[in-house]
Image (spheres, rainbow, N blue to C red):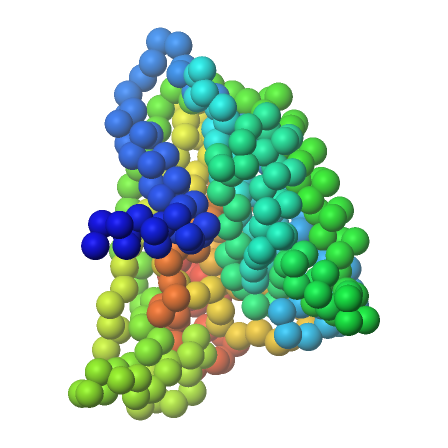
Length: 313
């Protein structure tokens, strides 16, 4: 059994990254709310625009017009006498295979660390690009280059991201305190798969579910809590990291890029606390979406964002 679990971990890059984040949280938890005469860690912040140009492929359709701004942001943690750790979140639907490898390699080189110490997360919004250089190579081989995503733009984001990480490392500030907390998010997450008495899937409750009967089923098994870790330099907050497990869709296929409701909530916290970088990560939300609370009406995006923002606050 133990051997099987270990093999699963070793074979799953995303799971290894999740465990890396967990180890970081445990490390920081031990130092939570303690002041050091001399900071044992520094932190650098970075953010770059990850919005593609008009005409670029989004998840399902070409981008027809400008819309919301997509962000790639994160922190460089620089523990004393250790190589930096970089945590990154991007407002894209996904970054996979060789795309994932190349992004982490570029970030690691910029930070002066190993790729194994870089966690690169996509928030999974659907009106957003994707990146997969392995798939791109196969498509190009069959005469379909650039069909899946804008390759030139992606390399540009990667370069600007690496530059941002390098500057963040150079401008790092001492971390004197680490704070942590959690809050229950009400009426956002719910199970997608509704099981029948035989244990098989009876209904799928999509992130926008128009059928009131399907919406009426119980919430199901979720983690209702949004978790937060905040880094402070004296009495000044420097960065806040939040984690919440839920698919981030309210509606999509608009032809315009969108951060959807988690990004709106995050951006509102940025505005509410100028000078504080807020980085949000999507938790393990495979069977979790907002379908119980969302019939697809566009007004629900702001409502869901407000509920998540309340939890962040």
